[in-house]
Image 1: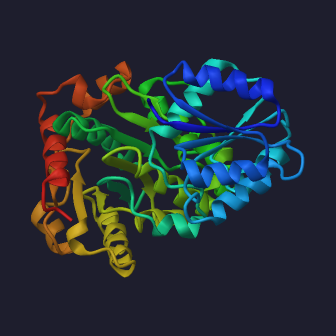
Image 2: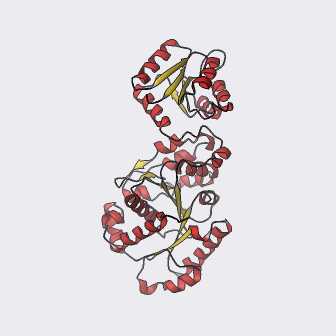
Image 3: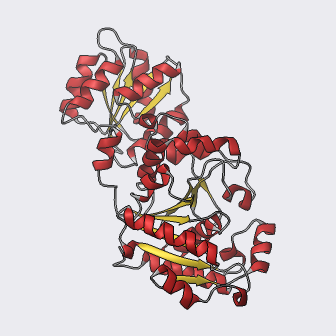
Length: 388
């Protein structure tokens, strides 16, 4: 048996139809035909999942969900609401009651099975408020690495993409790369994807309605093996930078999906970036070796310190894009920022051009190049045991 599922519906035909479909997939089925019976069976049987009809006489599915969430032994059992009601307000009511998912009747058997399997294979955190979710530990060890710069145009997205691929290659672990820059997405353009508004779709929701499954469903898998949450490059979406609680919720879910999460935070200390940086275990600060960028970068490093991020969780990376003879010497940069850089990236304009032209990351375009080696070194530093 793959798990025990409680099906609740006052319509006997629906009970039999859904029950039979799930039994054929190896699930054990428990049935109830009203709300009170559902609560009793949920308490007695402790199912792995509840599929609950909304429109029932007496106690409807919303009320049953609220009661189950209020009981200690049933509070974290996943619940799929199953109903003919299709209005957005109905779905909002369901999620506010504590449901994990919402299916409308009639549904295709393939979709039903897919939703059931998705919920049963993910961490069972229950339907928590944002405050409760932040008190929960992530499922398994998850390293969240944020990449940020003090000014635009320094290659944050490029390094984030190549670093994610390098970590995946070095560790053989799942890696999720997330562009947290609505209206400023670069990676979809860089890789030749159509404009992708996955991040904007999530940020447009009330934060209470953003579920782990919603984030998972919007990930795309690159040929290198990494998963990506992409942002649109349409400037109108920059208004979503104000959705601070949504950013916070999305990162919380991302940290439960893969052992490594790479966040492309772009530029500066916006309110959203402050919230996301608080969830990062490591922060890569990208610095260009020119006097005016160094000045901005020193201020950014000071901001990170003020936010309580320890020095040993900050990794300055020098990215050279011009000939070394016309940039500041590394010793001078080190003195200015008060610490040695973790990695110094040498200029590679030809490789960068060919990579953009072929829409292929530099680290896979020329895996034996000096730049690929420097990115691999950074990946090794960030994934080393004992690093905070």
